[in-house]
Amino acid sequence: MPRPPAPVEGEKSTRERILDVALELFTHAGYEAVSLREIAQRMNFTKAALYYHFSSKDDILLALHLRLHDLGRAGYEDLEADLTDPDRWPAAFDLIVSTILAHRTLILFHLRNHSALERLAPHHDNGDHADLQERLRLILADEAVPIEVRVRLTCALGAIAGGFLFGAEVFAGIGDDDLGRMVRAAVGDLVAAPGRATGGPPAGGE
Image 1 (cartoon, rainbow, N blue to C red):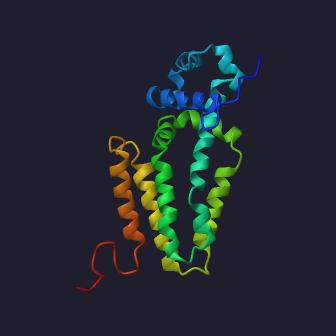
Image 2: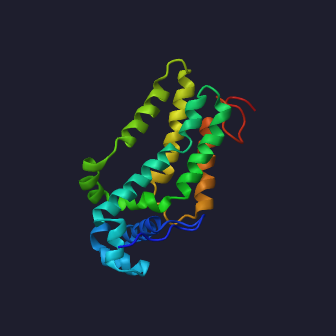
Image 3: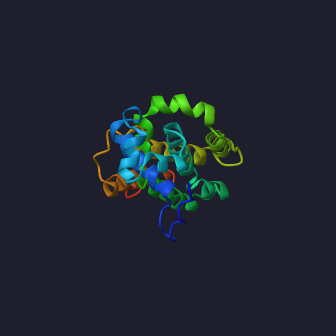
């Protein structure tokens, strides 16, 4: 089969468009309920053309699983660059929130297809997820950084995880702008100067 033409600059490749369609179908119908034929039909080409890019449905599942790894890197480089300077935190957290907002469907896909991913991922994981966890652990364990700073950083990351991961299903009906605003407000309160929250008076003051 001849190689498909390269995408025009700025356009998604056929492979990425296949993943976008599969992501939508797997999220709403479930991985087990979706066939390769259905994905091919949504792309308006044959199963044979689909096999040019992915040898199986599991390969598509794995590619979508690895997309989530890339999200975890957003903002961490800034946090690692100068953890002791809280002035850098807002921009890093804002990048993390913006990146997650742009990929909320990917998070729902992982939550709703947990069993299929558990079956597949342990045999194909490239170690990136473990590496990211270790990098974060080293940041939070760095005793050269004041403990209060590390605790506030941990709580802020927890607020992001709570709003977008633990609350993904519950908050699925909330628009991106509204959810992003509320999560950013919660994070802002946690990373504000010690003893006060954003928009409020100093603790114990008037």
